[in-house]
Image (tube, rainbow, N blue to C red; front, side):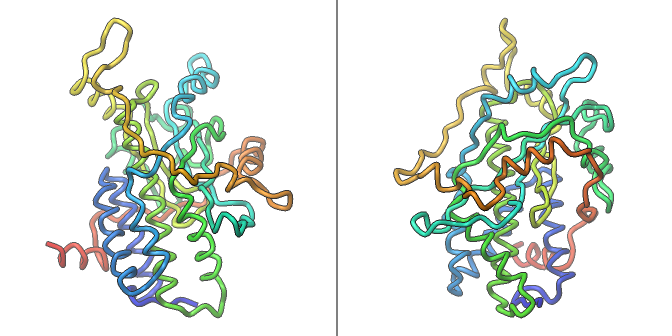
Length: 321
């Protein structure tokens, strides 16, 4: 049962989420985050606990792990005349709802898929952002489902304190008799907030620590609401960034681009085993194994991002102008 204090209908909610995704696709994740934070702030002021948790998680608290392993993984997956030219870092929905332990609260870090693509189906190498945006259709992007490999090389830390709560809120709101408007608003906006925070963190990592080589980098959601999918940086843009901000030395490194990223410290009470699945549930690793063994198929797609902003988001932008 749809209920909302913010959106007049489900169509208006999905139009709002589509506009947030459009901001990501256009390379404006900070603007998208600001809009979501504003809405979460209003919900927090009204007493919603999930919204209160979200606004306490700045992008600086989100750490990307496994980045240093990416170069080795790319070398293993490269084939003659068929190198990896794009990587997507996707939040993958748990195959089953995690059994969260009471001693850890509802802490659960997102399951992350690292998805590798070549130019065999879509030419990432010569595509700029506008070209990639033109490739999206209501059925998705041409590369969806046609990956070379998928694994768990890259992970995230720092979202577990809110992601477990978001999963629980999503499950509660799916009930046919659920009619709490504030809870539904918070669940939808917090879900988008998780996706945008990951996008921001991946962007900061790519810019601060650099990528192993110029390639296209995306962030998305694999069967995970709100099903966002957007390029972080294209290969062409990354090459331009290297040319503008760093001189290549004799070792082929870019001094300015590969400065160490200052990451948020790990909390003293962080427990890496908080998200270890029990025997009765299917883990993210198990799901990734199924993906690797399955025949690639065309995935269900996002709606095409709008050409301009409208509806509820347009009202917000005008109000803040």
